[in-house]
Length: 335
Image 1 (cartoon, helix red, strand yellow):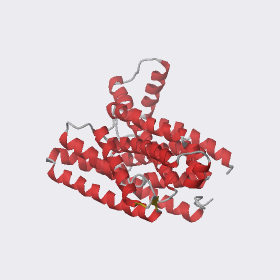
Image 2: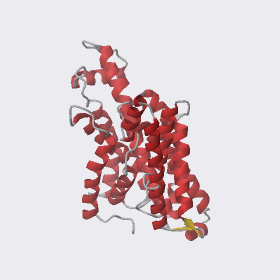
Image 3: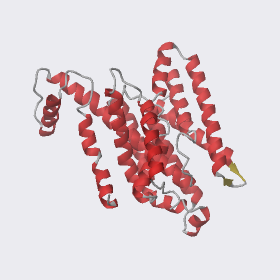
Image 4: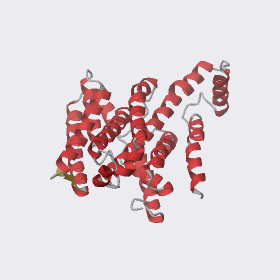
């Protein structure tokens, strides 16, 4: 397929995906025809009609719509953050999960949920940033950070925060424990306008910074020496991009739980399709990352009589798809 046509299709893809997702759900109160009339009436300014218009509007606009938007934002945040982190560390194996960001943010959010008086969003961001900082500090030696050291330190830090998360679960009361366990599996069943409002600004702020700095990522991917000769301060830019990735990812983790390795898989899929240029891949990770997670969430809601955590589906579906692509396509990192 022509590369330009593929890029256009990827940008258009979220529109039908968002619309189709409104029609997917277990509710018997909202048939396809009634949902179509409700959405058309909302867009045209007319009042809803039918046997129970209040219930229909509640299902469509208070349950499904905020979940769809939150799922899209979560997928976009993880994908863009993963792509940015891979670029600044020049390592195709790094992502928010491997660097410990997800585990740190998960511990911070679980701690806030257990103690109540701590803001979940702030706690997730602080501990997510702490986890990445620890990974980078442990891996740094003689002013340099090697690829292997960064991955190993990230695995160790991730293990530490996972253990701390277990401690929080162990000492939590049964009601809070149930919420924390469901949340750690990656779950969006409690999505609503309140969660969307709390995560909307920090996620978009982080993504906007990474979007603005996407051309600098191409320079940083060449190495620190090359970046300095181009008039760029690599340490400063890496720190700012890392803060933006932490803000977006931790905000997504705070509302959606742990969605493992999503930030690793999606950037590679996008890179296989359009190449390693971050000026193109950052916005495409935004649209494709959000759309792909939305499709997975639709499956998790409909494949059985009860909802399966979305974090399970991201690995069961994403990993085989990634293996297939890596066998069939040049991964593009060395180009």
